[in-house]
Length: 295
Ligand SMILES: [Zn+2]
Image (cartoon, rainbow, N blue to C red):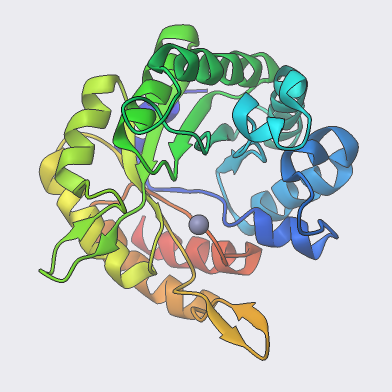
């Protein structure tokens, strides 16, 4: 199979939608460790991967977002980094076979590096390297470093993936609209700054995930495309901004509403399109129908 960064330069690819929402629907309770399900409830995790594959995704994204030792320590699982990540990637490979990619999710530590916090860059590097090695051992062929708050942490994770594994490294950031009409992360990083720094750290595909829905994502993708004309871009928008309706969190953008914007996402420069929070297999199936017409 060709490497993801090569394929993404030549064809439009569809990625998975949200993981958390699907696991909650299968019984994951608030306060429970989602990544532990890779070991304890492999059938359920595999069923989510399979649902997205059936919907038309060419990339299985793994249930390993919080699989670093800092996050797992909250559940007393800091010693299980290797087991959990290897299992999460191996389940992905079982579903993907040799025709689909397994893109492992790598999220933030929740801690802060000097000078904002007590952690050192070396400690972060080692934690991400530990996770990357386990993901590769389990059968992943790519990692997406996503939803990081700090650009410094994102870049350490990208370097750890590139230096300690042979995995394709994607980096994805979350941007919000600013009062001046531009976009920036919570800590003030613009899409242009993110693109420059993530690529310098070694990212092979860059993009944006989560955030405030598909409309803003189109504009963010256009800015990333302008900043990095030759680099494949991944776009994983939320299903809109979550609203509280009768005490329940609801994502307002339906599969058809979001699919109607996929063409503009691609025109703006996206080469891989999937979804983040609130997106479901029905969303991905609608994206796949839409993309078929664009290919
Ligand atoms: Zn999200």
